[in-house]
Length: 334
Image: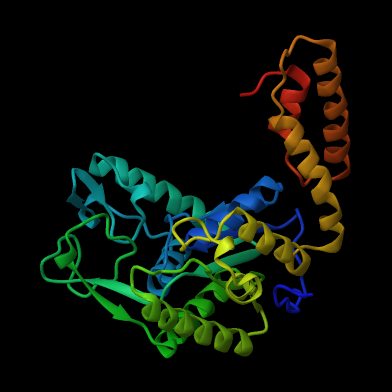
């Protein structure tokens, strides 16, 4: 008896290995996948502008990286005793304008260099709803789409639903710029399974529908684009509130792990897949907490994994286990 509807996922023609670099951008689900990739020792740069939900902010951020667009304090505004950017998540805010400017510009510089050499760009879109500034707001012109509301007063914003054609047009221009900036870049699109129920149940579905239509149109028209169905895996395959957190909005650990397993099969090179259990074993050994670090048993444990880790790094120098290896050699975590 089947209790969920599994479906076949098209595999990437050029799957990912540990030799590749990946830049991830978009919603909070991006950070879930990014953390799993990083834990598996892939080279990743994750959300250099912080979490971004809507297509306009994602496109704006990527153009910022391409053109290495640095900001000044004139681009910021104050609210709730902090300095913020309408183009960034609150993690890039600061108590002083200089602090926020430094955070943003350092991240933009790093993203520019990383994107120039990256092999894959992983874009997760969360919502077609955008929030635009009204004449009550400060820090940017009326009609500006914001990446984050920074807990500003609600009358600073008005809400708009993007249609699929608007999203397609946004990304068509961006993809041309990305191709000129980094010709070998492969782009992976996905739709976040996080449900934006603050907009309303029906409004969330309208939003996801516009994203899905837009992304599939783009992928069908561009051979260097790939769609990974994270949204469908949670909404249509698992299809059960057991796979959501208590807020009924965010997929829980089990759902995320299920999507990750499907991602490995569809997007990770077969030879690289064989390395992942060994990497996981080493990670678990690193996280092990001994009852008594001075015992011969623990010292033997460290020596065992020093050998295992050294051998893996010799065979695969593209995998960075330096911090872990130092612990196995010294017994001290930095």
